[in-house]
Image (cartoon, rainbow, N blue to C red; front, top):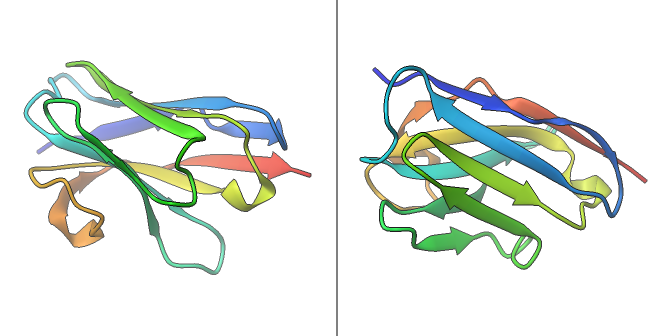
Length: 119
């Protein structure tokens, strides 16, 4: 069992930046594909980006050029720049073995961290 914990959420003005982190309690993340998803109130959870074990990345069109995923053995980060009010959501990290946009392919999930972008 992998327990993922996100941190770094908060309130930021439009145009600002935040950096989210995701770590696993007491274990390395090096063997997993890591994904980020988000869920806004009243909406379905959606794909944000994913990073493979070797560092390959895939992003949703809505965040491409603004968000960057990085990783080391201990954690995976989501650097969010040029934030917009529509980026407001709970952000979740997830671990799996397949680099995909599909939530169902990820086996382990964090509890989420809230990001609120004010206009």
